[in-house]
Length: 404
Image (cartoon, rainbow, N blue to C red; front, side):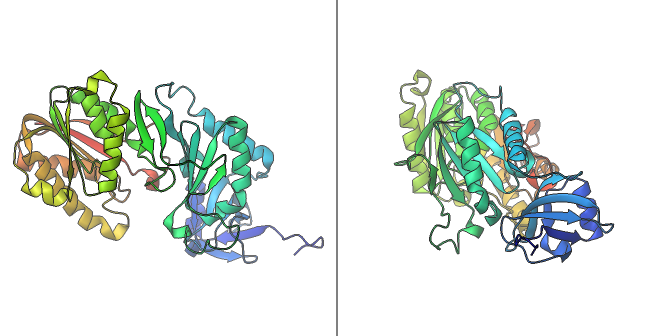
């Protein structure tokens, strides 16, 4: 404590390996890499990192309850993190989306966590409703700052707060942030409607997965639309029918949406209703199948589709699940190939950060060729431009396209 009663700045000394990692630009300082600190820290306060020569390395948001002790805001030369700094960081982030979208797309990511300089925070836009998901309690003291920044750029915006599961527990104290809380504007009465490439979708910003919709697959949905004309399509792990709608608008004869969740299929049904006036969807037969995808694929009649989309949830949420993930992906690809007619197309996606793009692509191609020697990869995609990935752990999305 200083003579004025103010806390001294939290100072952290780190291991040599952590020094190297921070100098290379990694945005996380793990708790087990903290060699010493001058005092206990509180969630959300700024902590400065110094190397073994007592030279400044970085500054970030401290989180004593997380394995990631400090989420780096700035590294390099010393900087003061004040209101002016936050304003500049915000404007730079929002400006990166300039020119990416027109009035046909009102749903996109505005802030993509560490890769945009906001470690542990994402912000998605659905029309005039913004959903912010935070992954560390270190952001709780900064919510007022974010509210002010958002209102400056989007005066009519509504802001809904989403919390990751790891920080939802223990938030029952009076005034503590809660998942689904509306921070700016009136609470939504239910799912909000937005547009993507001219199609209308609902996003359950209060209770849905992620922030309410899988915005990261937009570019792959657009690719599927171009591949769909005249085809019979299976959309496995269909969730709310994003790929299904694009395939239907693209001219598919039939689209089957397969998902275990009745809630997800109900959302898909509503999304088709939202677009019922689009004449390009009228001729497509849309069927919804509620079943476990692994079991259904194994029992389905072979050679009945011209386009199969496999977009499962994360198979390797942790490093220890890698082996089981490889087995699951192999099984899915084998079954997907079995369901294709000659000349068919397989689209296989992975959102598992612990499986690299190179590993996934090799697995899909090798498995497909063992099942059908005609398999030829013609496209591999990664992150959409509003979902930048600037460090290893951020690279989670990859998608492989094969023609048979």
